[in-house]
Length: 381
Image (cartoon, rainbow, N blue to C red; front, side, top):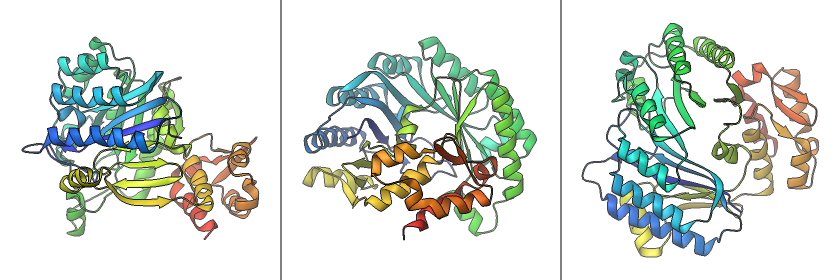
């Protein structure tokens, strides 16, 4: 049963050029009605799928959760706290944009129980911030982190992007240097992916988006690994680095193929071996909640074969990889019986290695993760 909860706030004051998450301009949206629907979804979900264990991680993402007023955000967080049984040591994360959160809002979040912030920095370069459609300035980043520290937040994560249009390695190094000076606990670093229905996709189709090539992007990734490792971060997943003891409990839920609740427009959930996707458009989400009490667009019962595939391609994102023992305990069959030939082939290519009981990516495999994961998706077709 789920031990994690994701709640989606789909409102933004600015739409970034690269973002394909479910989001809408904040102005003139029915926010209070939306929050009421989220509360009802929580209640109905727990009636249908009662908790068996306390929630150990909560992630409130978006969109921009802090685009809500302090009162509105309090309503949402309090509804979470009221409806779910939450572990005393729960990791509770809320996404924050630099320069857009007040001391009052931070203090409210701290008092409710939020103990981790994920700050959408992306880059410390002013020109690149404009290029990707962000509305904060470089100086907003340290100011926001300083404010978070003053309020008492001791676990702060930063999102960083590389492979941006026109980005140089020197620009990336500058961002990493600035990041290290801020002494945050966690870094999520992602290469730009041009997704449909984004501004960048439209520019790419017109031939107006000039991106670093694959080789330059790989060089950037190596620089990122080296600089963050030298600064005391431990890479524990393809895109994630943490100071000791601050790995993201919530993200590990996904990579370890565990179940989780998902609340809100466009949210995904995985409960009782069924993956569900909620309606994304606000009218469809809200009308579905009002008409039938559940907002599901799709429901898919995950077969044993699919669960084993997911165990491999998600688990291999972690640097510790996938345990043979754990695999057998979950599925009552050995990893080698299902994937032995695939594993051997990837080892021959230098993409996989074995460390004791575990199968994991090599350094080369970290750069070519998608090539590895595809092999497991095809393995049981």
